[in-house]
Amino acid sequence: MADRRVPPQETPPLEASIAEAHRERPDGGVWEHPVMILSLIVACSVIFAALFIGWAFSL
Image (cartoon, rainbow, N blue to C red):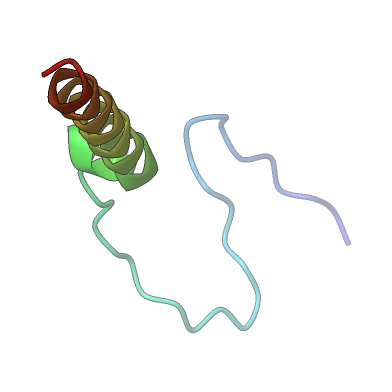
């Protein structure tokens, strides 16, 4: 059986493939990495708490 050549831009046909074409999900931007956002919020909260505690003890 001879192999048919498929151009590089095209996907070769698969045997017994039942999958349908699906749209690719758009880039989530900032929301793609929620751990970074959460860590930034936690870091700012810790800094604010440290400043507040320092202010309270300086009275």
